[in-house]
Image (cartoon, rainbow, N blue to C red; front, side):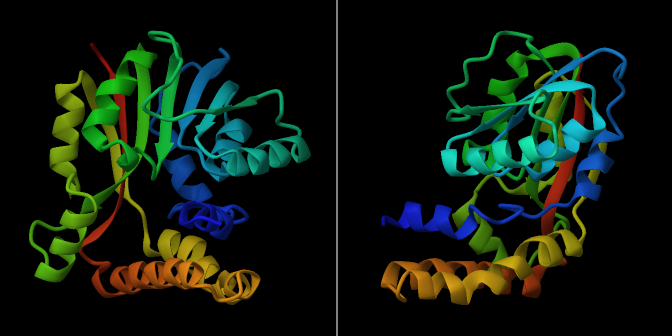
Length: 250
């Protein structure tokens, strides 16, 4: 297996591929003021195995297009939607988020939890806004500084990993410059990181290493995950995912 194949194998059976919770999804959804009587069109971009997609389908009268590049995640989402009787509300699309086949102003809501970093926050907002109707909403969770000053170690780490990390105010400015009016913001609590994401990662490490015969590539993936967890535990007061909800006004 390649490193990417191993990484997918490590995460494909997890409920989540990043921090979050059903409560976070519903809290973000509570900022959206649309006529729930009409059937809405929603795009969930970078959906992974779709825990949040399921939540949206259970709480909206909507047709949801769930987009991800990796079929392993979409297969799990399709299986879960069938088990829950939601297959008529969720359609999956195997596609890169920077090459989407959507029409101009096709959607009422564009959703993306913990995934827009793949193409960058500003780039994603600029690209995706065209798919959204005037008066529609965008809801994004994105790595965000929660303070104006940070220890050098964590600042250098995130500036190397993702130079677009920034404060919430600067992320809001990007939304406003792209024709959005912010309507809600909050950052994810510690439980969304530890209980829902990192603890399940730690619980499956031994089985993953055994499955792959303790190969160097498998050990490398585990080491990277453990390093990420350690940095969060040490510096969690300085960063989190911010959840941004904004309405397209122009």
